[in-house]
View 1 (cartoon, protein in one colour):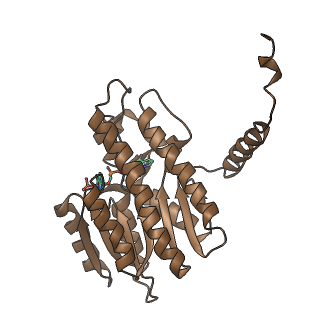
View 2 (cartoon, rainbow, N blue to C red; view 1 turned 135 degrees about the vertical axis):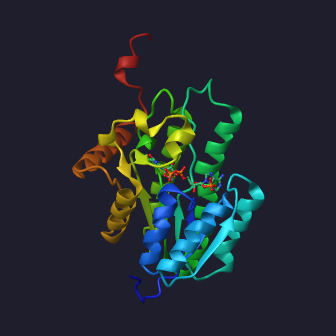
View 3 (tube, protein in one colour; view 1 turned 180 degrees about the horizontal axis):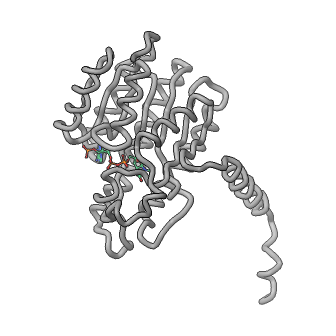
Length: 267
Ligand SMILES: NC(=O)c1ccc[n+]([C@@H]2O[C@H](COP(=O)([O-])OP(=O)(O)OC[C@H]3O[C@@H](n4cnc5c(N)ncnc54)[C@H](OP(=O)(O)O)[C@@H]3O)[C@@H](O)[C@H]2O)c1
């Protein structure tokens, strides 16, 4: 079923697989035309073909490696050239899990380049276009590993911590406008990112892993409910409010001209 309302066009990065592919299907069902971005042309075309068969929406594919400057420029330019674009899902991401000394420099560069560099660049391109029309939505896919780190996730967690803080800053920037920015914080979700990261999904407790369909459906329900931060797998929503209140309390407690008394002993 497709809605008749003109929703405009959604740009979805990392739409060839996993979470991005499900966003593409769900947003097509909601009536969005689509621009699907990823590196693997054959998979992108498969996703596009199946969506065209199921829904009366237009689907374009853009083959781009978002860790490469020229490709990223071309995708960023879409936002100034196509004023039908009303939604960006900044989803493409990559992970190599391992200690810092074990992870290769190229893998570090891939994580920082894609998870941070491309996300910032495309957020900026979308923000400029959306602010000029005072309309549009940016969905940034962070992670619960943005507020936690493991001995094998210092780079990945670092990139997602960036996404979390960056996106919250953007939300403050657009607070007085009609532009919406949603931060989605998935926990473990059953996609290829796990085997690609070096950890098979079979190594995880199945009770802690959500499928991508449920993750995306919950994230879109959160968007519909006006949430700015959505934690699809967290039953007790109050936990995040408490976490955030503690974070703010700590920040306020840090605003002092005096050092803490426990550091005065050595004077
Ligand atoms: N799965 C989880 O447990 C989980 C949890 C929290 C957050 N997340 C986040 O969710 C997002 C989606 O991940 P996923 O789990 O769906 O992973 P995935 O199944 O591995 O999909 C990643 C997508 O990103 C694309 N991509 C990777 N490198 C790219 C590049 N250099 N340029 C353009 N596209 C690129 C891939 O397509 P190509 O290979 O065709 O380019 C693919 O479509 C990521 O930001 C991830 O960090 C995932």
